[in-house]
Image 1: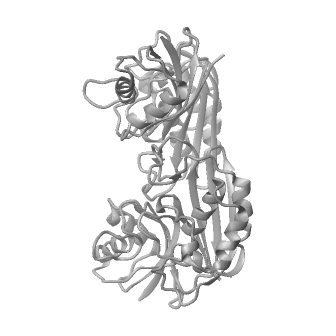
Image 2 (image 1 turned 45 degrees about the vertical axis):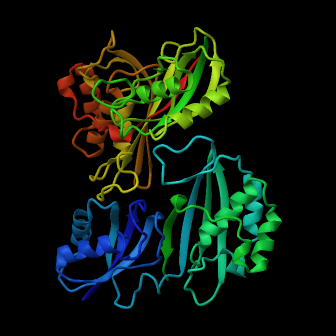
Image 3 (image 1 turned 180 degrees about the horizontal axis):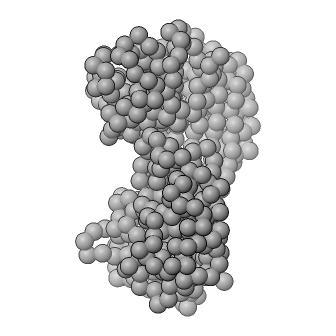
Length: 246
Length: 246
């Protein structure tokens, strides 16, 4: 048995999310079926993060154990050939130690949230960004973001369906940048709660529109109450960017 | 009658190109039908450039004459509402002089060609870039591009269907830039021949793959012979970026 680590890009639009679902296609299923087509083995593909329906990945990390002798390069090529027409691409593949785990060995995750701040709806980026018509004050958004940095109880920014043992997370980075009508929020932490990035971005957009002050973000955090959430950003603009390992 | 200038973005994938065609949808038709729905007027929408099937625009300029009294802002909003679900967005709208013409007043056009240089096929960028598996030497591509700058007879880089009176054009800019696996070719000229950008990019990719030397680009240009073209790049990666006016 050889453990292979994969670097995976995908377009989340046609999927119910990363994780296998009974009621629709998933990235995990697409990859596991490709592995089966290549090896005849029913191997589970584990990812560093379980993205939701409609959420994309530029650099998801995953691993899979395969008994059949195959080189990493040939496995990558075969996966890319077999996974079609699903919009999933394996960008890199390497052999890792048997105790390397895409999820449990991961010590850092980063996401990017893409907003297009204009009145017109999206064309080629439809489903790949959140179009926000109201002009966004990105300085105010950055001030709001600063209130979330560090170690906190993120209950306010956590989905009711979150299965994590603790709502406490340490947010290492939450930056807001604007280039023209593009507003990008970049987030990094050891791990995130379910919906945490989308919930934080939703509140920052609320601040950017002037409906909240930056201090309201800190107050919502301190309340540790999901009812205090301003809004949850749609999945469209969210990209899993990278996972870090020791 | 008021003349309105439009700034238009579109996703070229579902269209036969900018220009009205009997056999399929076009951007021009989508906009003209939206104008008709708003005003009841059968007005022609003229663009600064006629992009081919599958070619995109970030900042196409166009104009239309409308008799019905309407403000530029309301016209823009109404066009964006009526043009749906076609992936066309009007980003700006202003009143211009009656002799301002999107095509004939235009003194500069710029394009961007997006290449993703990797083995894996595209996911969320499918149809929005050209995936080239062979590693590209972008220094060689830049050296090849330099041979095309200036005023030349571009017959080699011109479609057989080109309707321009003369094959002579002055290429002001042809730059090759790489960021990671993204290779972007940026081109600017007063005007381009039909297929010129795609033909130039195709030859530069031939250079990048090592099948041509940079000097072969100059030799192909000097030959003034369409048979000397290495290859025509697909429409997917081509974006009309901007048009300049006095």
